[in-house]
Amino acid sequence: MGLTNKAGAAKLRETVAELNISVRGTELTAAILDHFNRVHSGELMPDIEIERLLMETERLALEDDKSGLQFQKGIVTFSPSSASKCERELYFRADRIPKEEGEMMPYQRRWVRNGSAVHAAVQRDLLYAEKYLTDPAFTVVRTKKGLPAWEKNVRQVRPLEYDGVKFQIYGMMDGVLQYRDGLKIGFEFKTKSTTLGAIGHYKMKDAQEDHKTQCVAYSLLFGLREFLIVYESLAKDGWMKGHEAKPDIRAFYLNVTDEDRDKLLQKFAGVARKYYAKEMPSKDPEKCIFCPYKMKCKEIA
Image (cartoon, rainbow, N blue to C red):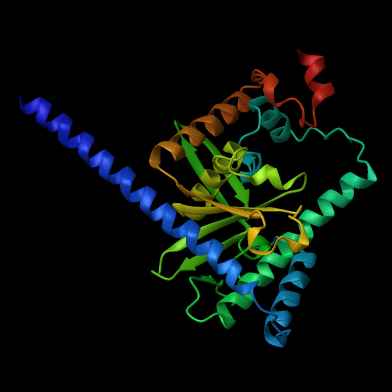
């Protein structure tokens, strides 16, 4: 009877926790969408102070000063953006194998260019929103130097050890926001360039798994637990649709758990251990399409 009660109590706590996370997620996703819609509902005049801050951030990014980063020599380095990659690809990266040059068509380069441009526009939106919206839901966290907490302004290296294996994570993220309740939220922004349906409720039920894994890596690197993953479709509905236009932006909430962190740490440690032992990991055929080491992998297979 006692065991049954304990099991029931544990199950109840788990259910309550899941409910709280769901409620929190609904609140935050609605808040970030409203935040962007509000700032995009009016015409804002250029703000010299904000534009100067953005230009200073861009200047520092171009200088690319890495002198303050404390990399540890002789240990494997992983990045959040590659966290979901095949273990063999991570091994090749650790071994500094040159990536194979894939041909990009002109339209593909414009695809990449447009995505980068929208990223910059969204960061500008966040700064204007916090200054000009009445009671903004989010503000951009600042670094000790007063710079927006995003991209190279916050990049860092964190040494870790898991199951006796040492490695380090190096990276930067799209932004760290502070919600109106004072808690810090990781912000990850993605674009979709094919059709508006790519972010529709039929095709997109949740954030992509690789994007969630990327946030788990950010959690390890920056110590954050809550993330908002926002997708914007570069394709839009008809100009004259007005209020009937299909949504061009979606938001998803992720609460990173200890289990999420442990799973990724286990993967990183496994790859690092094999690298130190010069033992080639097995490949994941499902991840071959975008792998930059196809020919190298075929030589080994």
